[in-house]
Length: 63
Image (cartoon, rainbow, N blue to C red; front, side, top):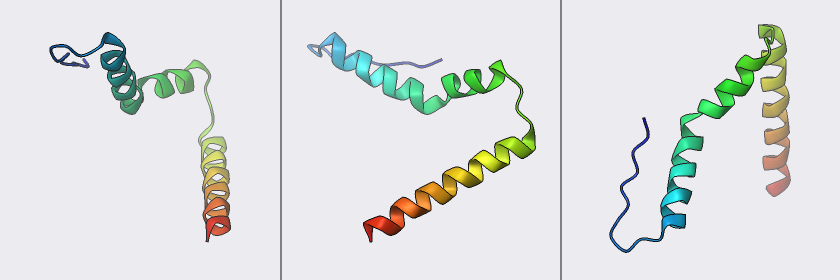
């Protein structure tokens, strides 16, 4: 369970934004989406490799 302490005088939108960030970091939504449809391990590994190659290419462009 995610707990957000709202400080005195803090706007509600700021607290809500902190909650959303904290919720996103837990990875609950990502896991839920991945469980909606079964994906073979080989397909998952292939996608991870593609992402890694893409990220590496982006890092090479920056240098």
